[in-house]
Image (cartoon, rainbow, N blue to C red; front, side, top):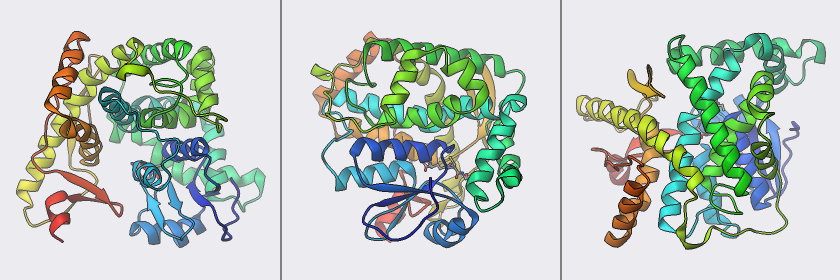
Length: 379
Ligand SMILES: N[C@@H](CCC(=O)N[C@@H](CS)C(=O)NCC(=O)O)C(=O)O
């Protein structure tokens, strides 16, 4: 990443090379072969570009388009660019594949924060020097190299609390989290020994969302790099493919097929992540009922329970996750009766416990705020 912010004809990606959602967008821009430059989110960039674009929230990634608009939120960035650049589409044509792609997007963006944060912050002896340098390099790039790591302390203190305080990772649920992470990576390694990407020889939304945590955290932070990624050569080869612009566009798997190697991943997700999302939808509904005049929701509303591979925890309840889940519901809503029946039959044959549930109040993430859809539509 350079720090030159002069105007040119391409996109500018503001972020950090060790940020989960920044690398998701970078991988996408590479795949689409769009001209872009990466600019580190220094203090100056945060004050001059990011905060004015987000209403004061220091968050990455932010993408500046060639006509000068700033877009925040990795999923919205991908959606907007998909509308503007239709070649190399990342939406599969088949209905079942579209549902699977959105499910894996939800898994990557909202659930893999568990292993990503755990393996970064709970292995400090291995990772801390590296991560302080990486954060310092982003925030204080103008400081002399020898002391730049000091510039990473503030972010390390903030993000270092995430596993315990935000995600509820503790001694009792750590063994289950680690066992699940190993199983997931094993399953992905098997999958990528047979397929280049999740749904064939071209990437879908889900690939980019899995790439965020797998590359920026697990493949770069020293401990998981050595113990989780190094032993899995097919995952490594996929990470490499996700970091380049392919010369040719590949094919989706024919016949709306979802490979069997993805089934165990979807089973775990439906068993663990979906009940948590359904619970946070209830918390969100209760909050809206108590605050009927409010148009936008807070980022966090108390805590919601989860089960992870048989172990319990409580994480901050993020109504934003409902919006991400609504992205899974959308293709289901738009499907014909016949397609829905076909999906239900497939799910039950595969023992995937996916029971789509509509929220009481639909939400929309727009302009860095989470809105009640009914209020946004009438404003
Ligand atoms: N859902 C957002 C998440 C962005 C996000 O959480 N970014 C992290 C860095 S990877 C951040 O800047 N966090 C600051 C904060 O949460 O206040 C997206 O997809 O862009």
